[in-house]
Every structure is written in structure tokens, then in C-alpha cells.
Image (cartoon, rainbow, N blue to C red; front, side, top):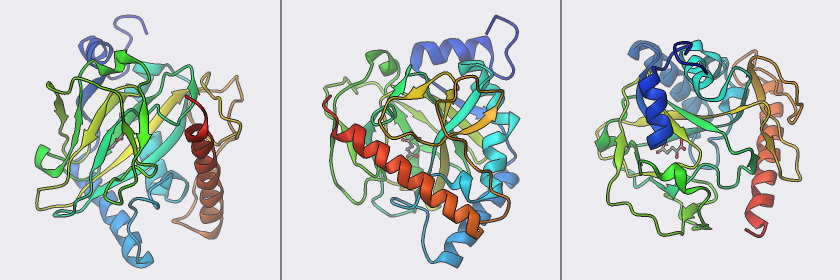
Length: 279
Ligand SMILES: O=C(O)CCC(=O)C(=O)O
């Protein structure tokens, strides 16, 4: 986008994204609004007797109108548009909850691993539903590492690792200089799909929860054999690389649950194909 025509980010923030691979924090919603969304999430978890954690944390934008509201919010999309242009699909979404005192963490990785996107131009917006200070295990990144391209990963199974495939950086990367992406409830951060990052266990006294929303321009395609779904959230799509996603009308109704289950199964199939492919 030409200088002076940005929707939300400053030229300085865009230059930082290009140089360091991330921007943090960005103001979006009031803390009260974020708290209300977290209350909705917790009410659902109580009713289901199941936390939206590893194994149950994919694509809640297909289940809950309140998540649909966040993924379409101009407060977030305007910034995403500044980075990837006006025609945008939501490729994936994970909830990242960490209870205080739990050992839950996220191993060092790059988001691009197992996404099979071409071109690789995906950005993750991490929207904080609760405060996520350093002691709560916010994301920690290696500035500039997005310039290293796709690095080698290995699957490491550990139930405390929130990454479902346990994909963990296996290549040597200098991690002597890192930065923490601390955010307050209602703020978000943005990071490049090749940025090397992790997050440590929550040592704060409150739960830390965020939504990691993966946005792509509509010209990007997924090169895996399985055709996956992705939601058009802004602009138009002249390419047709994805099946459209159904927007939720009610909180986790039967149709919402059925569509969600199918989309998650298809996404996992695609992930497994990529993980099994020679690299
Ligand atoms: O929330 C976390 O701790 C990790 C999130 C993450 O890896 C991501 O959004 O890409």
C-alpha cells in the first residue's frame, strides 16, 4: 500500500513488520469487551465440561457468533489489510488458553510449518481476551527470524505443548536476543508466518487466553492434496482456492457444530498430509 494510505498501521509499524516480523501491541477493543468474550468462552466450557484447549481449540469462528464478530472486526482487519491487501480470507484460527500454574507451553516454531501456503504471505493476529503480560507466558519471538524462510521442524509429542502436532523447531537458530509480545485484554499483536516464536508456562495468577487468527490474501492457495475451507472476511475472491465457510448464526447450534466438525477434520487431514510429505 502506498505511503499515507494505510487504514490503521503507521508507516513505522509496517517498516517494523518488514524488519522484525512482528508488531505489538496494537489497540483494538476495550478491556470490558474482551472480558465479555472471555466470559462467553468460559460459560461454554462450563456447559460442555470441556476446556477449549489442545485437541479442542481449532476454528471456534465456526461455532460462536462472538468469535465471528472478532474475525470480521475492522479494528483488526484494517491492520491486516495494511500488510496483505484488501481481499482477505481467514485460513485458520486457534484458541490459546493457559491456566495459571499449569505447565502448558508452546514450543519454538514457525506458523508456516504444515500450512502449505503458496505464496507464503500469511499473517497471524493474536487477539488477547485476557491480559497477557510476560509472566503469563505471552509469545516470545526472535526478531528478524522471518527472513530465514521455512526452517526444519520435528514432531515432539508432549501433552503440555499446546501445538497439536508438537511441531518444534529442529534447525539451529540464534535465540540469544528475543522479544516478548505482551498484550493487554482487547489488544492484539501481528506476526509473520516465518517468525520463530514460542511461549512459556503461565506464572501469573490469572488465566491467559488469546485467539490466533491466520489471515491470508485470497490469491494464496494451499498446495496440499486435500482442499480446505477458509472464510472470506473482507473484499472479494477472484481465485476460488478454498471452499467457503458458513458463518455461525447461533451459539454452537447443531448446524454450527456439524460444519465446524467437518472443517476441523478436513484441516487436520491436510495437516497430516503435509507433515508426512518429504521436506
Ligand atoms: O498463544 C501462544 O502462546 C502461542 C500462539 C502462537 O504460537 C501463534 O498464535 O502463532
